[in-house]
Amino acid sequence: MQKKMTSLKGVDASRLVATKYYTPLVLLAGCGAILFGGHPNFSTLVSRLILDAPFIFVAYFLLSVAEVRAAKDFFEYRRFAAWTKVTYDQIASCGRSCLPGFGYMRLIGSNGTKATIYFVSGPLFDQPGTELTAYIENQCPPRSRSDSHLTENFGAPDRNWQFTATMILAGLLSAIIAATLFPGFLFEPELKSFPSLLALLVVILWRASTWPWGMITLAILTLQVANWRFDRRVWSGAFVLGFVIGYMATQALNR
Figure 1 (cartoon, rainbow, N blue to C red):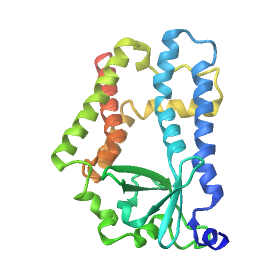
Figure 2: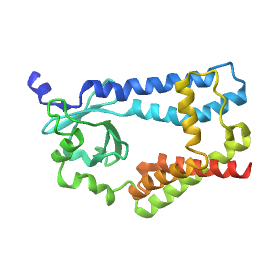
Figure 3: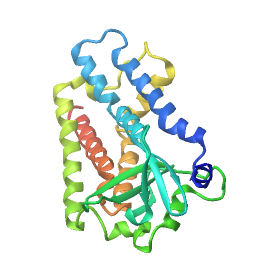
Figure 4: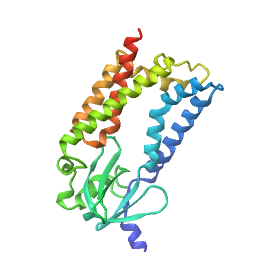
């Protein structure tokens, strides 16, 4: 048993704890303080919830990423408690995520279904010069290398275009509906009673979706979606792209 444990390679525990647990808990605590601070009425509560939504999404994503430790012939992963053992021939594709500090794997189930897991990546604890994602890629059969996601995908390229367009449209409609139901959503939030750091983060998020800084946000999101060739993994980026477009459009129409 001891030999097996020592053969498993993973990232430093402090990196994992900071990424998977500490950061999302801080985000959720900040969102809670903004959401319920000052005994808000229903309209204010909903407006704050919409403003908090990106931070809540990021926190949920970080809590759901997996911890991975790899050996020569297999690897194990877990999201919370139980470890799941997987052989490398069950990996359909593997590579670095578009999000810095994370990797992804598409696993083939026993019934042929596929599931994608994201995991905390970084230098191996006992081999600082080797990254976890690269180590796993080197153990995979050739068909599982990271470039295979360009041809072996959850859907055909045409369907990816349609899916991306749908998510952009969904984000655009969400922004228009939010601005229609809650007109105050279009204006800079009043956060004088909140801690300065939280207020600063919220103001930065708001300014990133308004003219002229919103143009930079749109350029970054467009490059992200295009860089991954409209792959379905960037659905969140496509949704936010549409949301920012709708938000800026409603702001322009209300001036």
